[in-house]
Image (cartoon, rainbow, N blue to C red; front, side, top):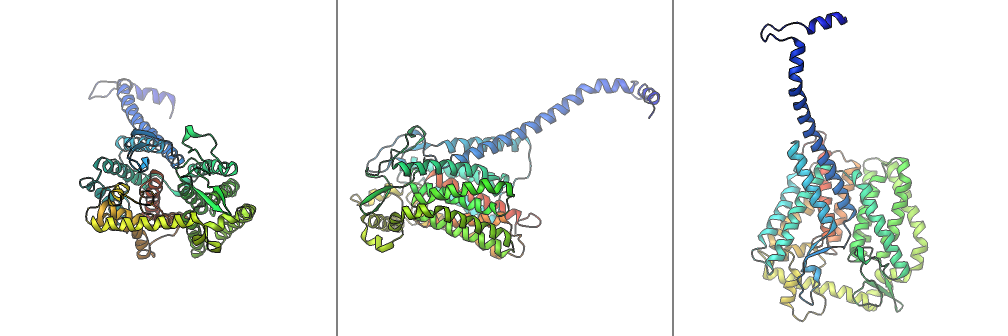
Length: 489
């Protein structure tokens, strides 16, 4: 368009307003700028909130295992373990709260469609949250039950956040950082057979000769298990096993440039997992890893399966010297030479589990409908068995603990959480695209179920709960993406 024509057009007068086009543009400019600035400000602020939510979510993942805490209220009642009674705030709690606050703020600033997950998983999860609150009314310790019910409420928000904002691939880096840091500390603890002076970060004072410290006994020698900065080697083992399964699920499809550091992380974390001597974590990793391997074969991804196989074989070869060196202690944990009947420490461990399960069954029988209150199993055991021969703690079987604390409705709801994903997978198998993400999330779900059958921390303790609700959210997200049209069946 010629310059003279543009200039003349700008000088034309509008017969309705009597203003030149240039005048109208100049007068309307402040309004246009203001509207654009408001829109830009709103969008950018929403995006900033979402980015901050994802940042705090990553920090939540990194700090999941930490036992470092702030005691909001101390409630001592010996001989009960103080962590079962005190009101505690962990770094992961703070990061989770910030993550949810920023995420909900982003939704308010920029409303959009929010997925609620498949009803077969979301409804039981909400029902578990609800019966947890209902249990506070008849609880043997109402304030403690309210404390735990509040945690379940935040975990429900965590579940919704995960299924809307994350994927297994997006978790790899923060989870590897989490596990690698704990692995380095745990390996050093075992090498020195003592704590590392990291008490300011939550490390327990570790001494194999000290009563209450978790050790393995073989040939009369007490061998310290790896703790990291967690409360117990079993908790560390579970966190490491989940991390390794996540790496396995991502490794088969990862770019070559990423496989080197993933391989190094896998070997390091596996090394520490062996030193936790956690049988439940070993079994969880074996079951979850095998599920991923078979999943790749089932969908015809033979190259990815071969890549996983090479990683596992390489790791096994590197770990052989360690396994050879600690073979007597591994044998004690695996019942070689009948250690479960000859080694006092293993006899005590298995006998303790039997007593706790029987005590929890007694509580369920006497409080079948409403339970004794969320988080109060140890208190109820003390009331029922004043002269108990072992430490008061929940039974090492999550479903039984859920029944004891929230009644049969809570137990049925929790059982639905464990089984519904598998039922809908079978039901809708012809409509699904079985991706690596879905296989990985399902493997994590299977591993957490295995641990829940052998330990209780995925129900009661903060690290286990975060992993469990994270896994449910990951599975719901992967299940949604597995449909061609993105709709749940």
